[in-house]
Length: 79
Image 1 (tube, one colour):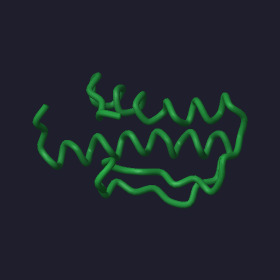
Image 2 (cartoon, one colour):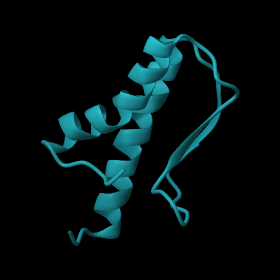
Image 3 (cartoon, helix red, strand yellow):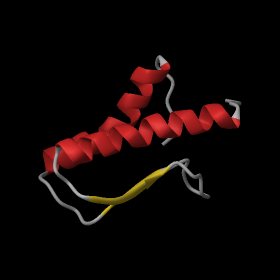
Image 4 (cartoon, one colour):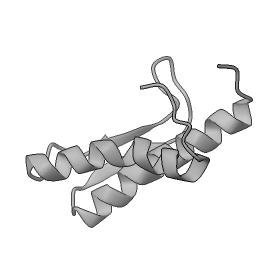
């Protein structure tokens, strides 16, 4: 799939925002969020430590791709 860099950044922003929103709602602290790509991903949320129960951690993990899917009409980033 060939996408423009701006499109990739937008998808990464939606994806990471989903993780952050659920981290906030689940009261699980995080250090920072970035949408600056590196060699392994288009963005990243760095958590302070593994906190919260398994259900909360699963919801936080799924919130990224789900928010991206909702906001882009079904398209998601790989991984």
